[in-house]
Image (cartoon, rainbow, N blue to C red; front, side, top):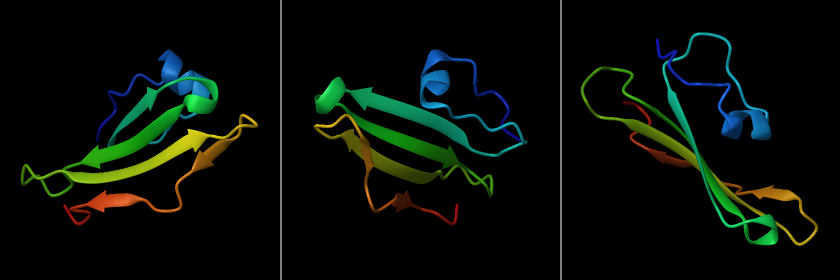
Length: 82
């Protein structure tokens, strides 16, 4: 189980994300820009079958002119069965 994510880190606190149950994924949040120019990618990564090939799940988003978060409608998945 992967329990080494620091959920107290400011990034997770600001977006209100935390997983308290045991989990097998590593999580990452990357952002670029500010306010209406902000863009982000949220990702989950794992090697569930221990073959050194990583599954990747990512979702991107932006902030609109009214300051609302707009997530993409699709989730990028690479090697989802790994």
